[in-house]
Amino acid sequence: MTYKITGFEPASLFHFFEEISAIPRASYHEKALSDFLVEFAKARGLWYHQDELHNVIIKKPGSKGAENQPAVMMQGHTDMVCEKLAGVAHDFEKDGLDLIVENGVLRANGTTLGGDNGIAVALMLTILDDDKLAHPPLECVFTSQEEVGLGGATALDKSLLSARTMINLDSEDEGVATVSCAGGMRFAMTRKITRHEASGKLLKLNISGLLGGHSGMDIDKERQNGIILLARLVNRLLHETHAQLVSLGGGSKDNAIPRETAAVLVVSADETPKAQTLAQALADDFCAEIRPFEPDFACTVIVEDGSASVVSEEDAKAFVSAICLAPNGVRQRNLKQDGFVVTSLNLGIAQLDDTSASLVFAPRSSVASLQEDTKERLFLLAETFGFACEITGEYPGWSFAEVSPIRDLFIQSYKTLFGAELKIEAIHAGLECGLFSDAMPGLDAIAVGPTICGCHTPDEYMPLDSCARFYTLLVDVLARLAK
Picture (cartoon, one colour):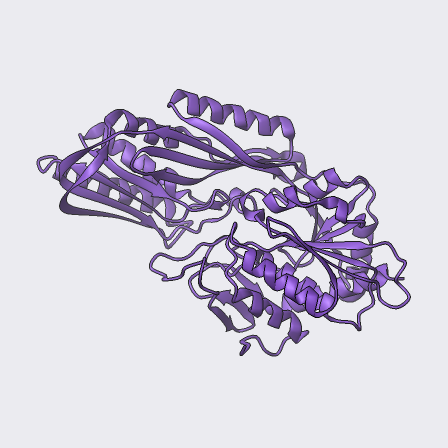
């Protein structure tokens, strides 16, 4: 293929990233990339294992003189969050990414870039492909379904791994090492609804231009949730007019803060001026509230002739009320750790179809008892408004280790290479380190990576020089482990 990324070393790192970017890899659709990894291993005579969830393990013996050193695991995930701008014609199940390089920065054209966590895949392939590097025996683990609850890492047969040192490559800030993370889950609520036909004027409401972001890393930035904003507007219309709800929905991933939402209501011709005036006044209020912090925010109100199948009054009020009262955002901070977020949740998806209404949340906490409290509150919300609940993809947090040789080694290497101190931090996002640590007693883990900005949004981008520097750091650490 013709490569777009030039002028950065090692060239193979960026070439591998471009090659995997040409392969669609939405969560649950990782088979093509998984098969690519298997063919990579076969072509180089490397041991590999591929399972039914499309996880792949590739092992490489240690370099000369390091054959008998303890094995080291490197790990990242193959799936990506698939978000795109409104109006962008991109099918994430069929189309590769349209990459753009500008001023040393890599992004995708109108979609998420998949640097989270495609850069991990590219890093491991680059190291596996280079027979000149010094390194201990390597166990490279490529997991699936990370973005939808760590499904691949949960199912992976960890008895195939001998390593007790783990380098997770899913951290997204150069110069920072992650040593602890929150646990999480996917909490879905569903309620049956009934509909009937109604005619009049269609009042169409749209919210767009919100910043959105990662429901863990960005939850403390006070970014607006489009679903909750629009429910606030619809709730006023339902209470102050005889409007009837046709649709209200937004978000596609529970772990992405919703940027765009839309709703449609049927209003009688007589009441249309009142409903339109009220909706526009609320839209103007929203703009005054939000644009100082999110300058591209827009809320539009359009009236058209037509008829539609509307949700019953009881079901509509239950759905909208549940959204308006849903806990969302930061719930607890640790004031002794500079306000570090301990517990949060994100209402990531709201949907109405012909027969049901559904809401999907992503609760997170590094304290198990507080996570249980969030679950209890969501159960109460569901019970109050007649929803059934389902919890999937629950995964543990990852506790800080007082003693960590791999952490010490990264600190030493970073200081030697760059003359600066490596920052050590806990994060409020979920990482697979907790699952591996629970299953592999004595595992010494760290999470590191180059800088990636705007993850889980179409604004995602990756500075290429950061990737190059991080590769240098990773290679140096592996060389130290080979001694």
